[in-house]
Length: 298
Image (cartoon, rainbow, N blue to C red):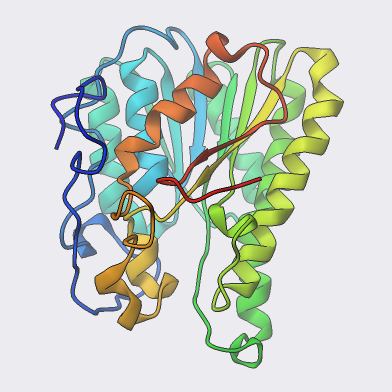
């Protein structure tokens, strides 16, 4: 594990290649379900004040990529509202504690993003408790592997679409009237939008939709001074993978197909979200920033 995100080293060896056991845990999966544990940057991310005074919402902020982004935002000076399922309370409280340890305000908002009204609640609570919104990260996702299209029941397809696409639409629409010029929206897409796996048909479909949503909305909002971009992770070691996001037999070799020969860690995604949230990326609009360990994207 690097000392911090600025440590100079060989990226092949920055984190060890892992060979986890074949296992599956119930959805939605917790950080405590992971062995080995993922690196969220809790012991390594060093902030430099790049987001001082900002107010952020991060969906899926209890674990994985969302947690790493929330921790980094706080250490860069932002107050953060994290959104998560009630079953993920344990993970959420841990991340909220790390936000507070950074001297920032943490707001914990449990609920189900598949319910449209919940988006309004997220915005209201964030405005009430943080006093504004100028960073919105639509990161929460559902991923269930299926051998065949005929193995995907209607309710799974519906839940995946609502979690990954509808929730992004609902929350962005609810937040938009409150976003000032200079605000940023960051959506989490995936390498699956470009290299869809045969066992992730519904998930890959949503990630391609997120790309299109991002690029279309970016054109609409750019004249208002609101930037919209996306991050496309490659194979990242998170609870999503062991809670049926991958077939059990694929877990031991997860991420080894990348040119780096290992999966990424959530901490390696955090700087991408910080860059897109900060004024440093003021001329970056409608971009999908790929963080894939070398797996090519267009």
